[in-house]
Length: 165
Image (cartoon, rainbow, N blue to C red; front, side, top):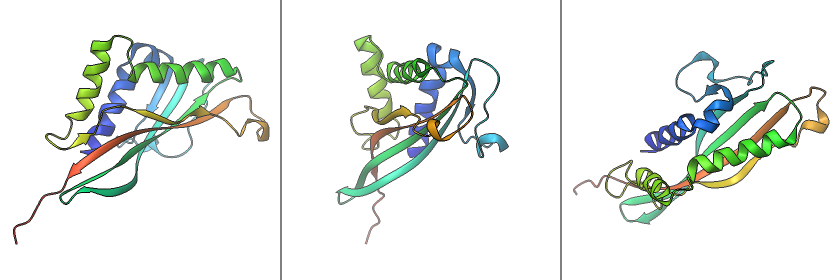
């Protein structure tokens, strides 16, 4: 269920016309040898993005289900030092997960909630921006690029199979 939820979040970002128009290459742990390692800075005006899923703590929700947050680390390389590009890219990510049309926004939440079937998937279907993308390493580096990091989170529930006993 968590894998499906992560892949659905990736699909939202890759399918968004604005986000995808500024991304040069995606690194999403799909089995490509280039998914790991350093994100490349390329001499073009586009962004490279790596999305890495990881689980935060889980706790029991009911005797047969657990609840926790799926985190997605967002790593970006932005080939310049114009902070407007970092802020605009963060806003594009936000708009991808929260469409302005209320019908589309509701459909997005339902999609995340229904990923794992009944009693599985995202609890409320809302993506949280635990850490908007930022770069706090720029003053220490000599290159003229942003390496901006952020974190998305979505609360999910996983029904555990009961065994007879």
